[in-house]
Image 1 (tube, helix red, strand yellow):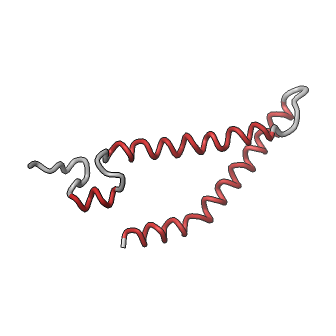
Image 2 (spheres, rainbow, N blue to C red):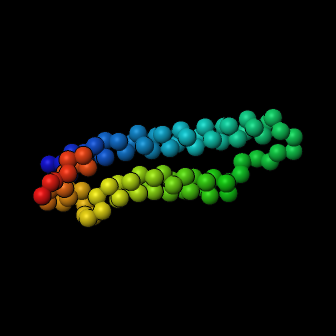
Length: 96
């Protein structure tokens, strides 16, 4: 059941994530144009910067979410397996 809820939630959030990504890129282009208009001899949109920075920020964000999750349950690769075998939340250690 948890997987169905997770899938449904992920599916429902997909359009919002895409919209936020488009809004963020548009705002980035807008800020870049504003900064270029304030500076002398500044070029246009630096596409190479967007090609490098956007995936880099995505990778850093994914690692920032993955590393704490992976280290919180070192014995199991899957959280549902950990809960099934008795490794509950970190504050509810099994004594015995």
